[in-house]
Image (cartoon, rainbow over all chains, first blue to last red; front, side, top):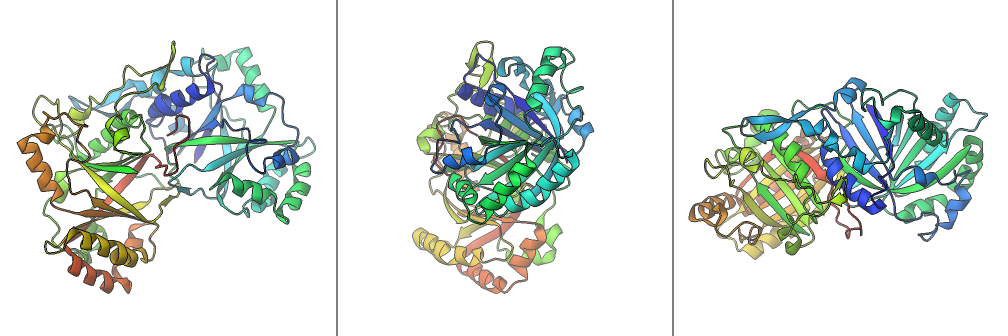
Amino acid sequence: MFKAFGFVKRNLSLTHDEYRAAHAGYHNSFGRRLNNIRGYILNVRSNNELSSAYNGSSVIEKITIAEPVDFDDAWDGYGQLNFDSYDDYISARSPSLDRAGKNGLEYDPMVAKVGNDLEYLYSGSPFQFCVDEAVPVSVIRPEKKLFKLAQFVKAPTNLSPILFRSYIAGKYCSALSLMPGLRGLVLNMRTPLDVMSGFFKPESEAFTDKGMMRRELFYSTWDGIIEYWFDDVSDFFSGRADKILNPYLAKLEPELFGASFFREVDETVAVVPNRNPPVDFYFR
Amino acid sequence: MFKVFAFLKRNSELLSHDEYRAGHIGFHCCNSRRLTGIRGYIVNVWANEGLVSKIGPEYRDIIINEPTGFNDLWDGFPQVYFDDAASWKKATTMEPTRATENGLSIDPDWTLSDSGFLFDPVDSSLKEFKSNHLKVDEEIIIPVNRPERKVTKIIQFFKKHDFMERLDFRDTILSNYAKELSSMEGLKGLTLNFRDHNIDSAINDFYPANGWHFSKQGNHERSQFASLWDGIFEMYFDNIDAFKVGRMTSTLNQTLTALDRKLFSSVWYIEVDESVIIVPNRDPAPDFYYR
């Protein structure tokens, strides 16, 4: 599938929790109606400080490598969008035929504008990019809020991008997939494909010099994201403390990563990704 | 949790079944997913191809007295979850969920005004629509775990024999029938729902007392619909063949068929396409806006 991530910084008129309400509430309500969308998830940075909030939090410092300073100033959340193709993604922002009216089913132009709230919800444009995805452990969601982690990883200077991806998708994620309580594990490598042009207006902040600098600075701090889902936070910490797994990962990580750091996110599933072929009727 | 099923028929003057899908899962849910305090929200729409067609004539062997034209009475049924009845009743009291130039605000454009065009209207004014909102008491037999793909969902409707006492029936379903059913090969989730015997449980203080739902005609139509079934099993499978194999070609077939005859005056199955608008969160609600 075609998969895009969009990192966003909240509008400074909103607190982080107000931003949540506006993104998971109003904005997602329109985003989930984008034409041909096949999956839509929002991840909001947790209010919990992973390195101090939990029993076992002390492990975070030990497994973090070169975390960028003030990383969280650049984002409050990130959305992830699934489509069948790039063409579907680019054409998604058009009026949607999904509103009952006096003439039957009618087009709603507000979907083309994704609710038309971008300037009030965000500071500047989203950092939107296509990811190359690998799914070592398919995500299975129970009927409760899961503990979800995003591990940001950056390649060391002495490792080619191809080998970096190969090693992470291979031996690193294979080892991670052994962690008990894991409900899903997905690797997302950021790609250089331009998915901003044609999706955002030409006058958007993204296409200004300042906007491009802001985005490139953010991108310079990481190359990929490993997403973990657990039943409970203790599953992650006990997994990372495992007597066999942890020494193996501890040996691997300095070799594989120029930087590696973790964030807890709160996941809203606005459209459950449907990885099967699409059905021949409107489905979300 | 407080769980409500709302059986809804489309406005058939304006919409086909597939157009209804889009109108309900698209625009309508765009608004209803922001109901205050909602903790889970699923919309089930009956599948375009019936089980007789998909399974074959053997389907007739596992049903008893399926009501004729049952699918003409509804096109879809949302299931909504709230913490309690009080939360459900104040769900349309809106909270701020929209970023505006004034910061976080109540959305002035929030509306359910499409309902008269989307659902079966009471009259040509389209001001009111008919619905069968029914509170159900839920028992989770096998917790539902959803993969990242469309699952096959089968709804088993059942109605008790008149001669059975309600409590005895309920006990037998829980202690015996559900246990047998849960052993079905290929079953990925199983939820049992008993319809609350009071058909007004979900709509008292929710719909206006002078509206269609509480009118003589409304009460009659709602009673007729509710009288068709006493409970529902929601069953999840990887595909329709898994249901067929699990229910019809396994050794369980004889056991369940015998129990069906003993317990039910009618029992039948409908495949529905499930849209998860909000994944139900059965844990306590977090202290921030969460869907």
